[in-house]
Length: 398
Image (cartoon, rainbow, N blue to C red; front, side, top):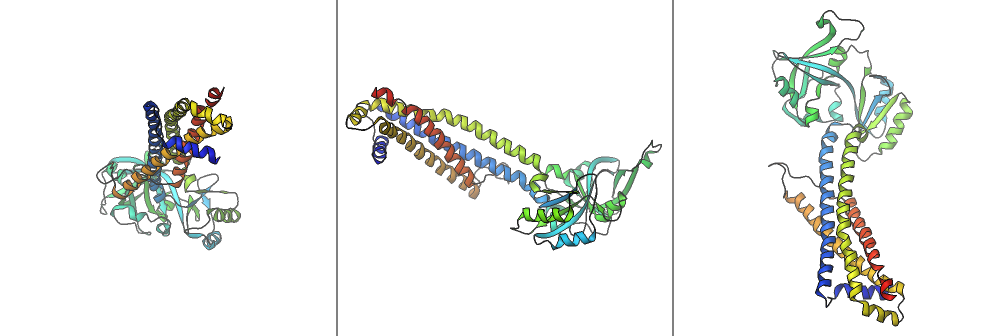
């Protein structure tokens, strides 16, 4: 192995008398370098976009959410709530009532979801940090906080008591309704704040005090839609989930943040995989240059190969020389490409070289798994291309 490695290094580092061989080797090295650089930057870019996309849901969604396994509401008595509070990993929880409603103001209407929360909600989700106007609602007042797009659709800002927003839900029951006014239950509230998180949420939710939806939907005491939990930093989510399941039984579904956004996670992961496969295909084409360079090197060194064979080197050892030469070429080109890619990503993170808007830099993320994936891809494909090229040895020694 030392003999093969020594010769392979000499062949790689020494220029050939044939300038065409040198050009082909340089082209192969540049191909590996460019392929590693491009693949790493693209994966880092998609990792940044993934973090950027998930940052909005991470700001809004709880660590764990307890939902009914069937129906719209759950009932958890005060004794069970006390036990949940005593679970070591639980930092805070909040009861939620959520229902689709129709919002009406000044002859303008828009559908939305009302999300009534209790006084502990800000301990679970500090959404008051996302307010772009006004203040958070009082838990005992007919006040609501609306999304910026809802505000735009209804032409409704933070108003006074004469600017009440009407919230309507269909009344439960069967049969035909003769009067449209009898078909809906309604309550009015004053808009006290406007939030902005992302386009979807800004047009979806109206936050209201817990009692507001409880009265509007005429729920029984202790009935609510879900229980949202915030876990302590560093706690084992799995152990908390198991405690909750043993405590509550099978009548509830417990979802974490990823499960609450499973479609978004699947879409982002699918896009990332598709881009990786496309760039890997381009890389395969580029790495054929490595196989071609090894074939040309074998043809150029035919006299040396025969001399080594006459001196006692086996065909396997000679083949290993060119395998190592191609592997070293792939390794050097790949490491240089990766190195430059890491520098570019660090510069983007530090100095915001590329901007999407005047205030928003293009998101990137430097992740160890991307470095490992690019290195492994380059080396595996490079060694395969080298192996195909090294099979020429058998013809030279024939």
